[in-house]
Length: 233
Image 1 (cartoon, rainbow, N blue to C red):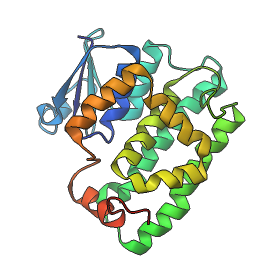
Image 2 (image 1 turned 180 degrees about the vertical axis):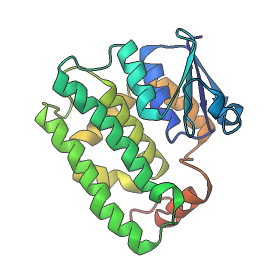
Image 3 (image 1 turned 45 degrees about the horizontal axis):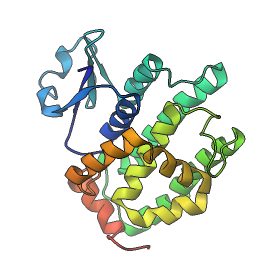
Image 4 (image 1 turned 90 degrees about the vertical axis):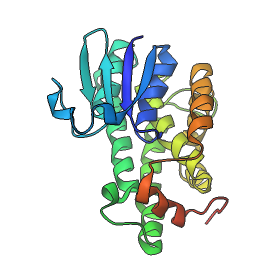
């Protein structure tokens, strides 16, 4: 066993880490976040505010914050581009994904979604985020059926993109057309990454367990009111 991953029994932020671990063939075990959070979180040598937490057996240390965990793993498994600019863009992509998770939950549920605010977000900022990724990929040569977000080689940025949009579209199929309309190359890239053998096997197993759950609680209920199952509205 190489790692222990502590998260809730939901995909949301945890699936980003699981997809990378699956793709590199690392051994890991899943643990409920309550094993650390909140009672033990400040007792860790690298404390974090909230899950996910990753315990790395090699260095015998915990790491927190999804973007930081992805960067830690990407360095260990050579999933970072070598050029300095692309290294920076890989980090930016992960942070952009984390920002979208914050925004789509309406800032951790500060307010629940209503129809007007949701429609403004969906067709405004969410569409713009999709277009940003599309522009980045096109600038670096991604094509339908060829290439990756930052060039000819897969990187942590591709894993992050697929974890973000693949999970979102699986939970809320009505958003698939949004991604296709705003970022057709990214839509294809997401499908390409999800079809990789180890990732496909992991997702099939985990989705059989998770169903179409996303982030849970009142926040998810609010999202599902905006995007009824089977609705393209």
